[in-house]
Length: 247
Image 1 (cartoon, helix red, strand yellow):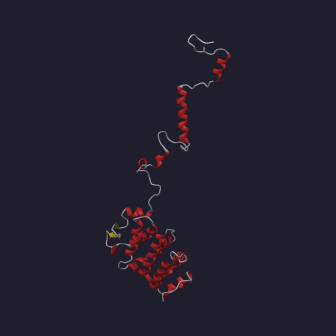
Image 2: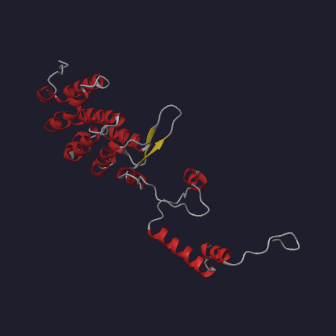
Image 3: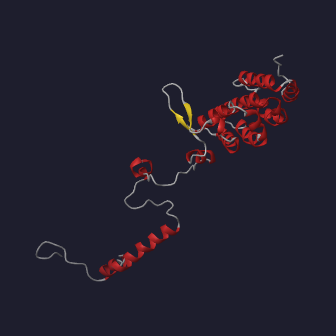
């Protein structure tokens, strides 16, 4: 049966009732708002894991424009970089077109080795620029001043500890810089270094077996023997039996 306009009449009777029963009741506006607020609170309580904030995209994390420049860095500054930035080491890096250098703000002859040389020794484990260069170059230059032998000998135990940490670094540039610092220390203090040689030669003994470092380590050992005397040869041979003396 159709109406006078050609449209079927509305359903009535049992089928209409069943259709109405099968339809899901719609929530009032107030209940929808409350449901959304509850979902938002649940996301906040769970830390927002697995949820993307409204209006943001996953690619925003990789977009430099969305990075907060004032947000604290994940890798905080090291102790040496903090001291250097605060003026604890009285020198500054001078960038050259070919070679860098240090400009001392105080005459190096007047700089107290405790704490400056100790601080530079602690910086030998740095692997980032400019801190690595400042620590390695500053350590060598301070050991070239007048009375360096007496000044450095007085604080040798405080220098050896951070020097050993740098020698044990898996970073090649850190290890080579620390080994060079050890050679300069042997030049400055001579046989006074012998009581501490055993503790630092452990790291050189490991590297001398590596073809990549064997030649440089051997040269360093020869320099140490040359400046620390015959007594150092016994210590070196005890740790590195394959070592060949320069004499």
